Length: 213
Image (tube, rainbow, N blue to C red):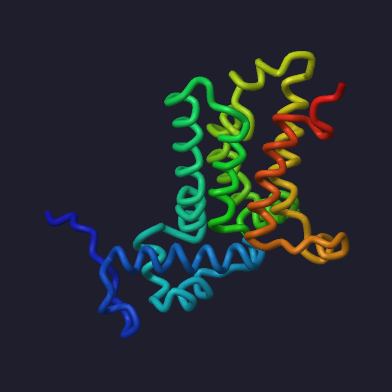
């Protein structure tokens, strides 16, 4: 008996694409749709239209909308997890600067992603999507933004409060509403985030006022 999984019939827009191209198109379309809207409001038809493929392709490659959402999330999270582990395994003397620079490099690729997560996790619905996020982010909880070995070196301070301070400095600039940032005179562009990264490194390593006599 032949148990080979048959690919669904394609339409004229997708028939010339390879399997890899179709899959990548769907992931890109999912990123565009989910990041610009609410999970519950995004339909598989909308994603398929954005990717220029038949809706059956979503079922073939990902099973359903939730499967596609999870695949999109994994694309974002796995590189972060890998780099966080590398920072701890390659050099046990890594600094705060290493963590902040790595976070900036990751977020600068898709600056809308943190805003999307913030919006999703504060929404009333999207229960199944939230469950995926919690499951995928659990392995990261003890790695970023402040690994335990570095937290333990913070003498005279509560390690968990240090971690919250780090999270506030690193994540808040990516989730602040643009109109609110503009009200305070900030332009949320690449130059701003690069300068802020270096400022945060200096702030955490030297203190707000530097060494006082």
